[in-house]
Length: 113
Image (cartoon, rainbow, N blue to C red):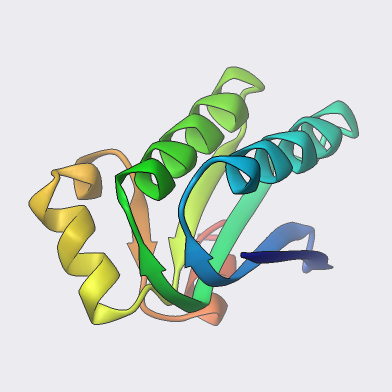
């Protein structure tokens, strides 16, 4: 998995690419999130448009990311997940704890609504 971060309209966008399988990927994401919340960056969107596959460890990684941001009084939203990953999240009931948006633009705009 590759991870990149940028700021758009006061929202931090973390773009994930490749296969999200937990392990070292989870550590990289967790470290990045801790740096961001330490800088008081609390509006986070995870852009999943570049994610081809995800396993249960990848899902656990996203849950931990949400917990980290929520503990800092922030919010994390998911953008542009493929139909396959969105279905996986629905099947595991994760759509009840994550806000999913079809596009990155809509996820960013949701913080202004």
